[in-house]
Amino acid sequence: MKLSVARPGDHFADAERLFLLGSLPDESHITAKTAGVRYYAPGVHREDIEAQTEDHIYLTRGAVVFGSLNLWQVHDVHVEGRGMIINDEPQDPGGDEGWMQKKARHCIVMNQTQNVEIDGITCVVRSRTWQVQITGMWGRADRC
Image 1: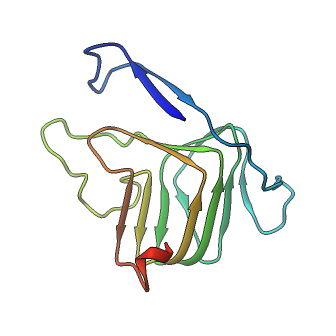
Image 2 (image 1 turned 30 degrees about the horizontal axis):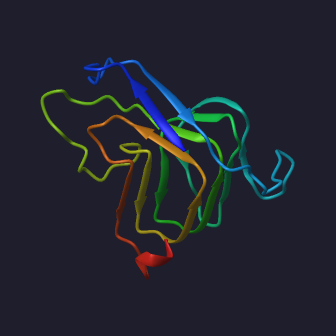
């Protein structure tokens, strides 16, 4: 179960929240030494993850990425783990540009992708934008 707790009436951009995130144990046995894996260790990572074709990206439990997962014109990508991506992109209080298809605009952004699997990670975004934005899929959408 994943819970977000806030005080009554405290729901604006400067609100303080407590996140309680429970998940099933990870049984993948992937480590930092696993060949062919881009491994994100426990700790804070401040970057946008730019996926490449045939990437295997792993966010271990305790890995917190402040940024975005960008899958842009790639195929055969596998992203997994129990880590977290937090997209804290600044937002214009006078307008909503969350619909725009741009890299790093959402927790996960996909454009012209094929055969992408994402499993087990947690996404946190500001409330005025989408967590995942997908456009221009190749092939069948039910295989993403």
